[in-house]
Image (cartoon, rainbow, N blue to C red; front, top):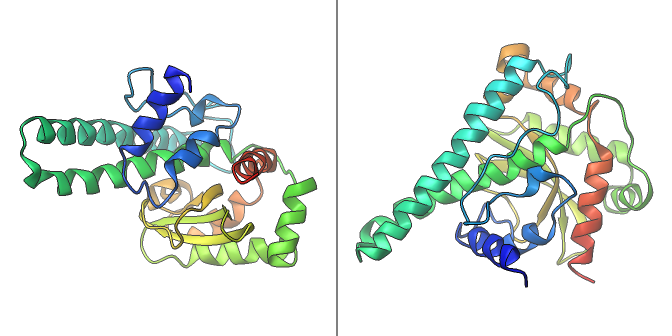
Length: 242
């Protein structure tokens, strides 16, 4: 393993459960974009540049929302994760383990947010695409049809209590695709799943443009899914089990 890969793996594992995502799997599941590179050479969490201009998703998502969401919510999670990791190291250095439980929980929340947001931005484009090939075959095998999967993911996202995410994920244990409902950032409903497509339904993702109409936001996001990115994530996830 190269030094940079070792550092990245170490930093990923430091986050504990990492919203029940297998950290090593995510480390292996890097798609060819910088957004998935979550740490620098020193193991610090970093906020990568968006893969497009803030106005790129107009009119589906307004540029002000993209700016605030990316800079202060995603960026805030990255800053929080770095602080949490520093506090854990400090507690270990001072042999003051009474605080470790608190900071570990905070790190799980912040780092999970970092992971899911990094996937979210690359899951979006500004035009209508459709899944094809292996991805479409897998969707049809697991759900019966693309429409059935989208209906399930839509309802799962729209009806989540409070804040969280709707997720299409690959489940290695059953070699199938599953739809998950994730409360907040870190509480997935299955362990070991690798997220492929995520729908952010925290209010900060849509409130400026869509007000309280979460359902309208979710329906609009389905119009601009970057299925090529989802397909690449599936391809990389499948390699982990071969």
